[in-house]
Image 1: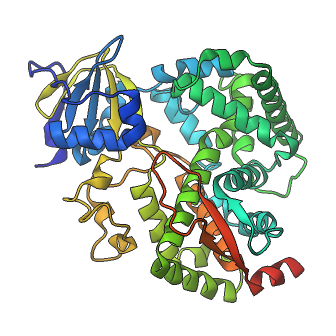
Image 2 (image 1 turned 45 degrees about the horizontal axis):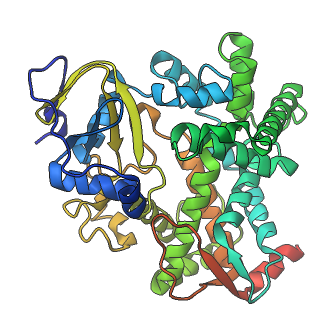
Length: 453
């Protein structure tokens, strides 16, 4: 059946979605993880169900048909900003690019599209690689490295220096603490609001906005007229044309948005990708050989990075098996029918977009890490609605291409510079645990050469 045929707009006399046979609990979700929980719901109950919540039941949709619906039609039926109203209040803004809808959202995306594009990094690959090398240069053979904290610091630097053209310097820890606390309190609901009043948080919040003010001020002065316009330049140009486009506070939050949307996703994905490589020795050999061949001819650039299929397919398979963003929430604004059930206006709704990632009818043997899924002749991810690691539809991640470049360059630099081993060697990652530790087994010769030059 054509996926679009299972939904239609407008009021419906169809029955309400059935209640799921299993309901979420903190223990169950902690044990399974959100997307595993929703996969079980899908397998037991189908593509649309209801979950019982304290205030109002929530409709949940999943599967490839749900992903196609969310991509093609959800913007006409679902508003996403309501779940982020508390976050906006803590930021002190009326809107952000992720919390807006309709024409306002379209306009914000249009202005920000260039600043989040892969293209703005084309002349900056060397800087990305150098930042990764500086992170690695003091590692000693035998040293144990906690990967996620290292990646978190590295991507904070990369986003600041290369995407925002303003290094975070001493503000790094403050920005991470501020953004993480807001997310855990207002979105994840895993921290009490009391955290928002703690002195350490208030200091981090104040210093984060101090950094944002500096970023905006430096761009207003245009201290580096030779560089290409970036995200902040484009936003300032839009504000110059229309004073009501963004308030000063909204401009400051926009200056922090690459950190808001990037630090955690980049760091976790890079950590998971490194884990999968170290767990699969044959795959590590394949990818390392490709990386060495590219570096032997010079540092990767926009053209040569596109030829690194082994590395790219490893990233795609990591995103499939270990998705970072999987659950999207909203409120229904216009009624519709989906899979034979009505969904009414005012209804809270969620989609777990990565349910198709684990369906054997789309990805045979879905629990096996297999980068050849993406080769010509297979391309399992091309099935409609099959692959959604970056979100869907109007709110799909603008910076997906940019993120892929940063991750691939970082992993390539690591593999070229050092040989790492899991520590302990039999470590198995838990989906709710990113405590990956590696041991430096060898400093490779190209590392010393690159630092010497």
